[in-house]
Image (cartoon, rainbow, N blue to C red; front, side, top):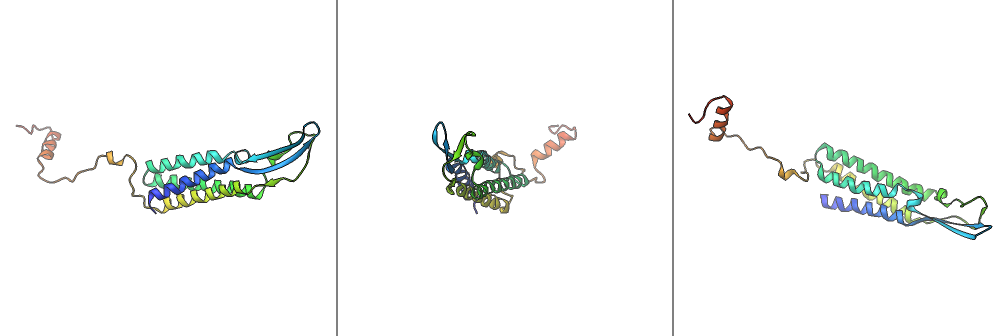
Length: 182
């Protein structure tokens, strides 16, 4: 897989993760003696505050992948895989359990007025985002490490030393404390 395609897949995973943080993950209705019926809802960022930082970490890791090479690129790709696993785990936890901590009654005089409902769209989008990030990380790990980094074109490339090179002979004479012009 080519690097631009891998980057697009990982960025789509980060976007899906950030989008899942904005979606509603669950709702609950409560009855309060003073205020009447209360409707509470929990977005993904309220149910799991780690979603947006994980999406930002994905984008940051992609920048590091572009800047690094060799074993360092492989290490950053492994960290990206851990980020993808964490995003997927957060999504699965949201699918399995209602965001009850966020949907608890606002005070003690509140009684349940209806059932707590889970909206599976937000957690499922987080799982999709985690899978996309994990696929991109796996592709980066499998990829050859010989790819160049961002600033590699500015690095000095050693030139082949040829015997009898007049410039090389001048420098060797200077190193031997001799005057090459004499």
